[in-house]
Image (cartoon, rainbow over all chains, first blue to last red; front, side, top):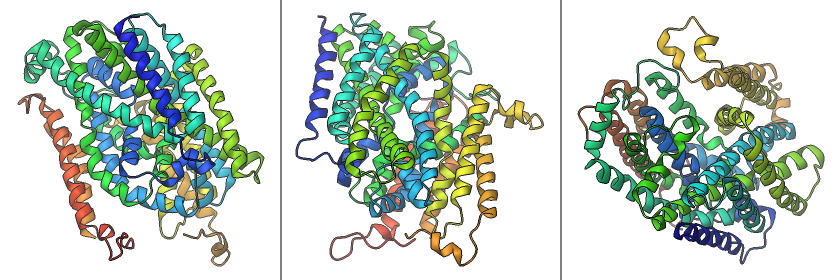
Length: 494
Length: 72
């Protein structure tokens, strides 16, 4: 066994051990399993919410994006920053409501706020449709990382099966606690490695950071700035995408759910000032990708995601490649485990209890949620190995799907919520449908609204769906306003 | 309350500022100008949110050590 493989295996086993051990001292009731008994302090909540940033998408995709597309990658740094600003005001009221009503999932929040189990089911289905492709993305990344850093000793599909099995076991045992414990190890490892690589690679290969950017600018003029025109690269694309993704950031069911794990609301306000700095680590991921542009040229299509690892293989000894690979494995396992916990909870708590068995007890829901874990994992593995084109389309839709939930969440937090359950339901349904249609038919704003000036044609297509959602939401809510007195009975206690 | 307006600044700086600094030269700390601009705003955002945290009465401790009642 090579030294790199040895390190990857050791770290994976440690993650498994830690994930299982995390349950010690807690009876794994529904509330413990899904939201850690609402007992997490600043550090755990911080790491769970930061977990969204350091997934395989950012590790492989962030460097690959910089390598293949250049300037557009900057958007990743921008949207999370703005999302944290919003979180200062958005999350405390969500947390307070969730605590009062002992909520365990995002659809649960909708079902209580709008007093409609049907709305809860819709939100759960949207959530699962967005989460499964996201899990597939993590597994795909895992396969790539292990196959590359083990120098081919373990095939990509073997790695995917093993990774999925490890996550399934510790999620069934410990739920969100397993994710929290492992995110500590993951973040420490990633932090060290990314800082090191991001500083070392430019200096080693180019002399300094400035020299590297000068060299790239000379070799590929325009690569480091946003072009005037072009869907998914121009300045207008940057602005619209950053805004749209900032709104969607906390609408991911697993991120929304991690809010419930906090033990007090001030944690969110404190995190809002630390998280922007923390995600600057991404900058060093970009540096790795930029360093690769001139050193391992020629990767195209989906292979651009390999740029960081190709350069690592070319630069370092096997044992260090193993350390980088192990960190990469954790970036897949930890977010994967959060997604798995959430998707299973959605299916058990919101689809099963909301649709089929309204009087099911918490104990029964907890049991079903655990039973759903291997099922969801298996579906994700099969999609990863045989998914093909469908999964790519679903992935593109995921972020725009969850963003459709934003208007209904914001309205529900107002002191007097004038929005109705019918309005929320229709708005979300129309928005999601619009996202699906535009993604599947590859429509752009320019094709939909040809009368717009050229620059506006690069606006992210997700805005069309969100606008339509808001319009339908407002109109249907206006039409279904309860009459003055009758309205009091269905108004939600706060 | 006025301290909340501070939170609008990152949106202005990042969303509206980028078209004006969409250049490579001069490099700042070795980074292309437009990237450096975004990085600067990330750091400024943290500072702004720290100021907001200080000014927000919701974060003042009451006598028994519990957070003061949220005023919104």
